[in-house]
Amino acid sequence: MEILEQIAALLERGEDQEVRSLTRSAMDQSLPAPKILEEGLLAGMQVGGDRFRAHDIFLPEVLLAAHAMTAGVEILKPHLGKTDLHSRGKVVIGTVQGDLHDIGKNLVGIMLSGAGFEVIDLGKNVSPEKFVDTARESDADVIGMSALLTTTMPAMRQVISLLKERGLNSSVRTMVGGAPVTREYASEIGADGYGFDAANAVECARELVG
Ligand code: B1M
Image 1 (cartoon, helix red, strand yellow):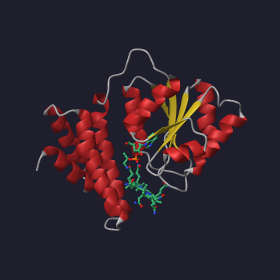
Image 2: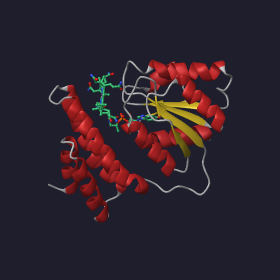
Image 3: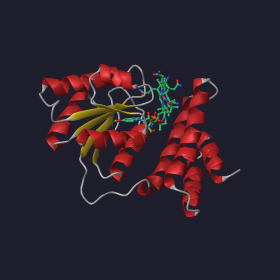
Image 4: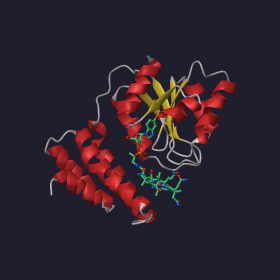
């Protein structure tokens, strides 16, 4: 089995130490970090997600896979892009209120930093007030929101409404993403941008700070 397949299989089993060390070995073999991310870590997470959906594995296993994903991403982080000397803009990111999924949001943050943006990561389960207050206090250009649950997607609309209420919607742009979020949903709630994946989120942020 080639190394990326091994990483995917180990991640699926939640073997964080092995994932960490094989990710390091893949880097030592000069495989590009984005390839290790896509074909190793994300491939394993995808299979885990599919098995979870099919009730073939359960939450504890998913949680272990998530830890293993984080372990691998930590190794790749410094190699996922080079930061420019000058900031391209400031982005406040977080997972919306009620939602604890942060793997995708973390990847978006890493890719944005790699592309030269200054990123303020508020973590997960972030209230609309926290998003808006932080954006105002830090003079951010963009608020980036992630949601993985259909039940938490409406929290994105609340953030956008609060920005409008405070008269900040023309100075702070909004960008949304996450597996259940679509471009149609983004425009329905009045978001300024939508990122399909982490690379696309970078393109979107570039356009928004344009
Ligand atoms: Co949860 N979970 N989970 N889970 N979990 C999903 C999302 C689910 C689809 C699984 C399923 O049923 N098949 C389902 C949601 C169903 C729905 O709402 N329609 C689900 C559920 C139901 C739940 C719980 C309710 C389960 C329970 O308790 N009964 C619970 C909710 C907890 C809560 O949030 N309140 C729960 C819990 C968990 C864990 C804690 C165990 C764990 C999260 C650990 C963590 O994040 N630290 C977890 C995981 C890991 C998943 C799956 C398996 C994988 C998610 C993931 O990390 N994907 C997921 C199934 C799936 O998606 N296949 C599932 C990898 C990640 C890189 O992709 O996050 O999509 P993603 O991010 C992508 C893009 O979407 C995009 O870029 C990223 C990189 O390409 N993107 C953005 C993301 N944010 C963006 C922001 C942007 C732009 C792009 O701009 C700002």
